[in-house]
Amino acid sequence: MADVFRRLGFIARITAYSSDGGIDVILDGPSDSVIGVQVKRYKNAINVEQIRELTGAHVVKGLTRGIFLTTSTFQSGAEPLVERLAETIYQIDLVDASRFYDALKIAQRLHYRYKDDPGAPYNRADLMHLWNSYGTY
Image 1: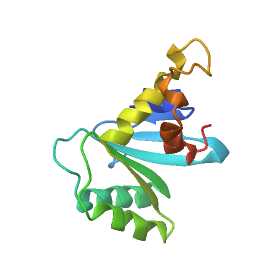
Image 2: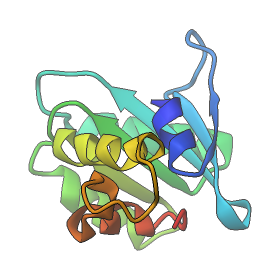
Image 3: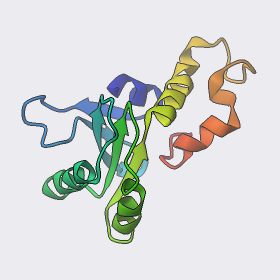
Image 4: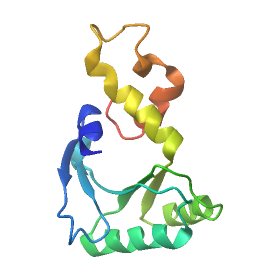
């Protein structure tokens, strides 16, 4: 996962597996932003409690922005929770399997001959908006 974020323009640091505190990757982005990422390879939907745990990990590490990335989906209470968190100083972005696979397509841009290749998946406007909020384009 860190490699995908690197291809999207971030400096990605992988945390120690045993004591990551709920954060698997730290991203250094533009304007000195630091983003904590939790990655879950699950078949079942991510529940609200897991998002709360990620928020707690951010509090402990002093981070205010995070990404919860999963190969599954999120339960129905996840969106309202992140909306409430956004009203405070904590911003958590939810990336489900669909968004994740779209990000993989965008990260493939290095495999094309030129940046405006019309066949490149990263030139699809419906995919590009996914990552514009991170300031990498």
